[in-house]
Image 1: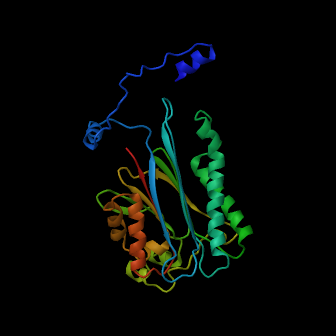
Image 2 (image 1 turned 120 degrees about the horizontal axis):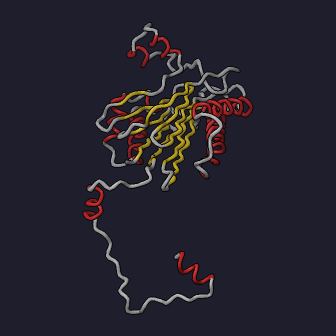
Length: 300
């Protein structure tokens, strides 16, 4: 194509293909494609695949959750990497404008991260002025200011993952959760709930079984939009590979055991199906709250 365009610009004509030329192609069979994959051929660039799911639940009149999922990929000889931003926010029930708080937090955080990453995405040689963790902290602080202005007296949880290559940085406030899930069914919570009951459990004053049914299990001591000083949990770790990253609101994890969460993900036919199954299971368990979930996988 480039050669033909060059010739055209210089007044030269290209010779058309003969009418008798055999240009027929035969589609590759599934077995041929699978054969190429099993030969160990590495496909670049790596990509972040994801699925999302939401439901109002069975006992709420409106949805106070908000989610955001974005995956980009850059491929080239000197720079090849995926970038992903994934966010779950749960507006605080019983407060005015809970849905406004969650939507404002998600939009502000995502917009801040994208704005500051744009020069780096366009030109990878461009150096970033701050570390990824500092960038996440600044984005959460900006979201805190925005929520305070847009929905005074309200609040929201916020759990966000910024994935760059095989590394991810988590920013977390409240009791939405991030999990790392292994393909054989094991997993772990990456975040720590900022709830009164979780704190009592950590101090050994109540058991995990008592915490699960405690009447104050939804009371948070840290949330976006609440208080002048915000102390989010921010840390970086390796993306689970092979495996999955799961972000969800408490409308999911509070009614399903961790083993059920992990099993529904690893036995699903794809990421979208995994999210559908998780939401359906939470509703089947009573659906007492809004349900939000994002499942992410890094291709090899």
